[in-house]
Image (cartoon, rainbow, N blue to C red; front, side, top):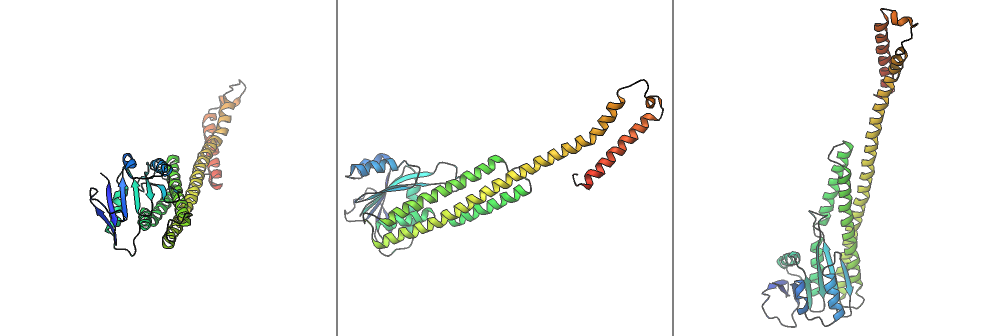
Length: 307
């Protein structure tokens, strides 16, 4: 069942079965299979809307009498899941969303609960819709930055839960955010340019403000991307340090046993004329020499801070 709204001094939900006046400003949410009923005469525009409705990117096409675009909004709680994708159609009297989910309707219901606006228009509803899509993103990015700080602390403390897979997931999430804001910025910039003059001066100003807002979000996301790259380098540095420590331990152990191996090899030859073999004090003497060698080596390694 489609959702239907009309614009008075605010966005107002009405019964989808209710007949509307052709002069009324209407906002509607339709399913993909209902596209043929919206009465778009331009075949190119209809085909563009049909293709963009399933697009997983945010984009807008500008025609002489309408704007047709798509929005791809990621789930902030699960950034690596598929985003919510839908298309929209904007002309002088209608704003139509093509959404097979329920995101568009929920956002429009939130807009309908808001306070009354001065001189509400179709384009202004789309602007409010876009604004709602990034409403809490500044706080969300601040939370992402804080979690990156926790990850940095875990890396420095060598916590075992930080792995290559974990670092890759972080980077993929931030890249998705960066791409999302980049697309929104490009889309709102095209709308504010309004090459066919579909919008009023005030509406162009609103989309220009939204473009500036998404630019700031994009810059924040890019700084987080740089931060994640630094974390990746720090993580790799910690891995290298751990490997060096392991190799150092192996080197110390090997060095300790080299002289001991030489002694055992020397006296393992068992020549008949080796006087030590017949001495009753030879065995304890060799033990004492080996112990002294190990103590000297350990003191040397500790002095060099290898232990």
